[in-house]
Length: 133
Image 1 (spheres, rainbow, N blue to C red):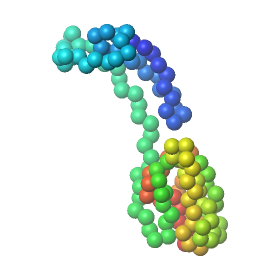
Image 2 (image 1 turned 180 degrees about the horizontal axis):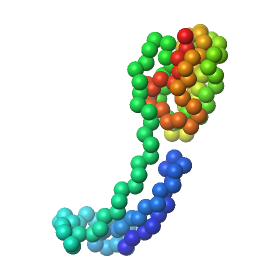
Image 3 (image 1 turned 30 degrees about the vertical axis):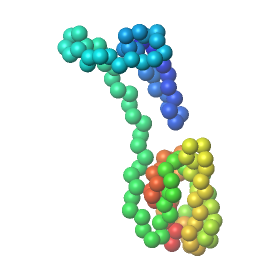
């Protein structure tokens, strides 16, 4: 028995076809087949794998004046612009992970330079967000 499903992951919709390969397709408990799937013409056709969503940019080596993401997540707010003067503790950005928001604050006084992220970007822990010199 096959089912056609639409699955939404992080706002992107995927069309998938799911095939129940258990002996009793109507059972709610999945039972592993006792032998591997046959090879050759008797084998069931396999669906092409769905395209994977774009991966987050790899974390770059951080310099002394770089502000890095404390956690992986999605940038939901960039609170400063390049050239802005900030003081230690000022809010620079907000990262959302698992429906919880984390405020990223300045570690020292300085001028915001080279903002490397924007709202909606996925980031990894340790990824450089911006430079404050």
